[in-house]
Image (cartoon, rainbow, N blue to C red):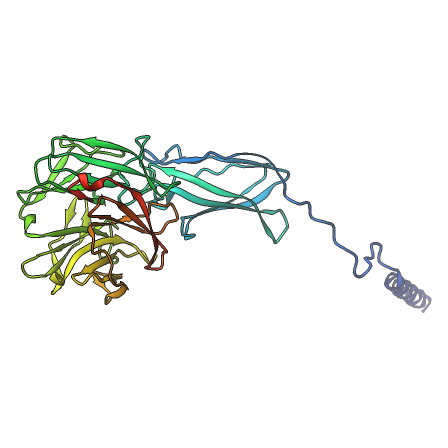
Length: 415
């Protein structure tokens, strides 16, 4: 009996003592109490303490190219994002990394996947987020000039011998001279040129764009005999009669208008190269030659009839920023019309741009971008030999005209 009693007493004492311990712990204040509303520890701002940012991204050669290798030094480890956009603000490529060091050292080879950036300026923006922070801040932004990238339509070279992403203009004489004037984005005019002689009488150059896989612009040349050639001189090399070429076919003198319009067969033309538009003056039929790439065109397809009502049909490139090549047409009453490319080998119905336009113009060229804003511009030569430029708005319209040069009546054609 005592033994049981003693046992019971010890158990009771243990339970009571444990209960008091638990109760006492519950009544004790927390060791590290935080006063409501107290501010959290302040984040340390990200500071750029140094940078080396090259002006040029060199995509020449095969991957990995020299590329673009900027360096930014910051005051703490960060997660950073570098975003590239074209002149129109359209996203092209993004690089994101986290660095445990205090240097941001991206390498960009000029590609987005398998696609090269276009030659010329490209915008970039660098953002970074501190470790543990939800907010990204802009550290730097600017532009970089891409060389050795995707050839830009009508850019065949530059004063330094390297394509610079700005449009160039070809002019010809009856004696067989070809002159290429190099566009200058800082002036919206031309600066420097290359001249070649010895071309056969009646030749006609047709600036086209990339026709093979070397990332260099090529030029179609139709001879008076009707033979069509594609010349591939190489990136920035002057076009001469001795430049490498391939014969595409014969009988092209059946057309009085042949123009490179840009890509109007999106969804069909997977190469993204420029397509051709040609008119038969006898029937008024308008035909499309879709580019396959590799200096090959698909057989012609009829786009429409009745196009002999127009004095000029001009491949103008992308006038409204939708990625499709557009047409400008001047009718016999001197009204100027625009037909928007829709992709998949189709054009929208014509839209009137101007009346009483261009009665004195004997040549009109869809020059693409000459002013460096990413919008396609327009050039024309009047009978007095003046060269005029209309600055594109990127919305399918143009601003007022600006005279660029005089004395161009010495050329029998501008292209």
